[in-house]
Length: 238
Image 1 (tube, rainbow, N blue to C red):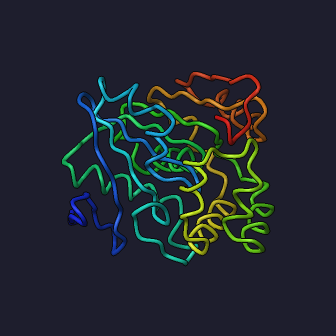
Image 2: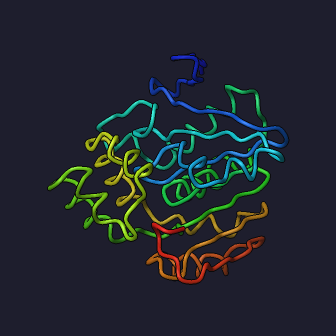
C-alpha cells in the first residue's frame, strides 16, 4: 500500500481507494474515526484534539466516502471489513504496529470490525454510539437523504448543528453518503466477536440514543469492557 501526498496532506491507497488522514500530538498512537456524514475535522470542533494531543499521537482518518477521502458510490465497498482495512492501511503507511482506537457511530461499527479482523493491531477500543447487532432506523434517514439531499438530512438533526458543523455536513457528497448508509443498514450482526474482545474496551452511549439498549446488552457479553451511559444525551449530542 502506498502513501501519497495530495496538497501536502497524507493519503494512503487501499485497493485503489485513497484514504485521507491527519496526525497531531505526541505519545502512544490513538486512531480517531468519525461517524456517518462527519469527517476528521469534527474531532477538533468537539475539543477532542486539544484534550488528547498532549498524551497521544492522534491519527484522524476521513472514512471512505467522507471528507478528503475518495467517495465511491457502490455500497459494497463500504463493507465493514473493508472499512476496517482502511484503518489498518493508514497504520501500515505510518509504520505503526499497534494503536489505541476511538470510534463513534459508524466509527464504532468499524471498531467492532477491527476487533473481528485485526485484534492484534489494537491495545484498546473505545466505541461510542454503536452496538454490534443489526441496525434499525437507517431507512428513515435514507428516505430523507434521497428526497431532499444533505439539507434534509441535516434539518432532521436534534439538536440542530451549529453553523460550523452544518457547513461540514452540507459539504458531503449525498450519493456517497447514501452508499455508506445502505452498507451500514445491511451490515450483519457481529455479536459473535464479543466474547473474543479481550483487549480493554469502553462502550459509551447517550441514554436517549436508540442504540443505548443494544450497546448496554453487548457489554455483558464482553470479557473486558467498561460501560458508560451518558444521561440525557441522544445520538447527535454525544
